[in-house]
Amino acid sequence: MEAEAGAGPSDEELMRRLQAGEEAALAPLMQHWEVPVKRFIFRLVGNTAEAEDLAQEVFVRIYTKRATYLTGAKFSTWCFSIAANQAKNRLRWWHRRPALSLNAWTEAGGDTTDESRAGASASHAAVRHERIAAVQKAVAALPLDLRTALVLFEYEGQPMAEIAAALGCTAKAVENRLYRARQQLKLTLALED
Image 1 (cartoon, rainbow, N blue to C red):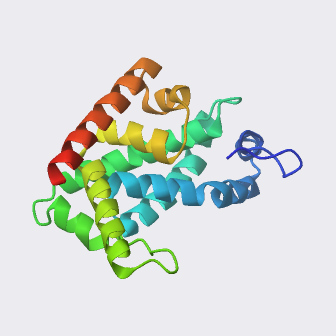
Image 2 (tube, one colour; image 1 turned 90 degrees about the vertical axis):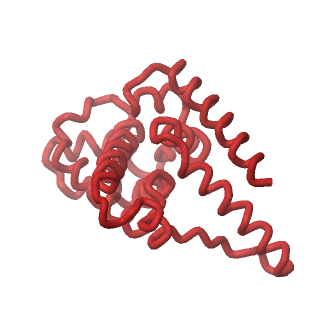
């Protein structure tokens, strides 16, 4: 997701400009990272509307906390760290609300539909949808620390070192979380077969 040569300033350069008072530097950062941040948050909270809201909060936080960004640090690591914290805070908030269960909230806003490829049979599409839903449900059931590491690694393609920096742990701890997450997923999905 890095800026390519000749494709404009890097994310890190845009952050340097934002820190220097060039507020317009936030727009290209938002344009570049909006979809990955929403996708990441959705995979943690399982609710489309909440993912939209939290993504906006992430960019507000990036703007308000711009002075804390360390020059030379990788922007994606900092951005996903903020996104993970926002998602954790929102999940904690929802867990304390007895009026609406987390499952009901997830089902209400968690659009898990996946359009089938053109020409695929209806039964193939149904089976595919069931598999996708089972995996999404199993990932959503993982403890948050395991889910966050798994989503950053498998879905966002972040390297171990960056995940460790974003989560404030060691690369070995990330490796351990990924192993545990995969083991739990295998067990959960095997029980559903």
